[in-house]
View 1 (cartoon, helix red, strand yellow):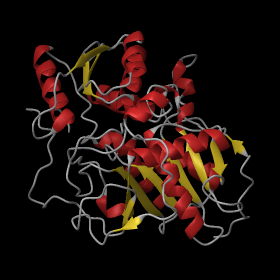
View 2 (cartoon, one colour):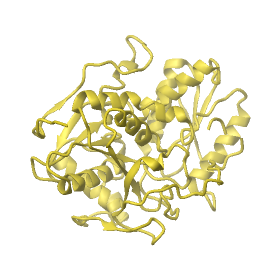
View 3 (cartoon, one colour):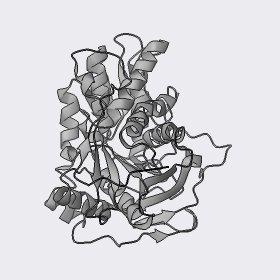
View 4 (cartoon, helix red, strand yellow):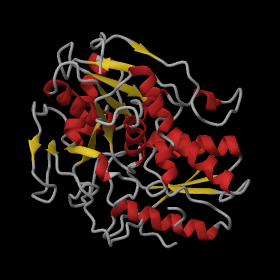
Length: 383
């Protein structure tokens, strides 16, 4: 594969605002690129905490396709600058959804055909919208016996790279440009909120958690980074299992995950994320899907348990629209037994990710790279 202090108290929860700075992206006047970045923040207390406690949500769903618009545009732009991606060459990538929209955007702006490899678990709207924007979708038929759907997708990516001479893959799990893309988001948060004590991020490729934390830590060295993963994900040392939730978690070990930056990790189960996303919709209107529900659940617990005045920022990667057939579909949720269970007020605790296999909301403060230093993380696709 290719390359791989002083605060003035917590404001009222109804206040949402944008910065006026421009995102650090190439200047494309009068194009949709101007809609990427400068997303608002919203203070959220209920239903997770009682004012004045709460957390600030960075609403990345205000980007055209979600948070990964930033990464897609940056990775494509840097590859073009270095000559790795030549004009008109195809872009080929594996995706479970949001990155595909970002790459479709980059393809339209820069004139590249885009080929997206996905699997049958992708929501219908996420199949149709990239195609509407000109991308070609390739759906794998069955999971790989060891690496699951992600491994199967990467193998198809390798086939397509061989099929299309000159094609280029962002390799988002291992591409450092995926991390660098989020420095602008860190700068936006600093402009909007000032010093931040705790940053809560979902973890999938590891890009936005690493990039935002590094940017914020330059101003606030004591920043605590809290990772949010899904049960059945192997990123932090749990065994890989079939996963219902999309957008967070992984069955491979991305090199972009900055294990040393995390103060703790929480694993969240699908029913808990559904409860959280739906409560957000009822009480705050601003909501999202699996990642947003999981992140809000964890950020709310931190707001309840940390000293009053702790400034907590939580990244909401996208909005609710792609989840109308899953998280917000009663028939789907009943079929997967996702309704009727209220999450506990506190997570379970484990001393080590290797102590047991977790199946519900669980917290661990011992975070380390689960692979020995001699093991090279790979996508499984041939280079």
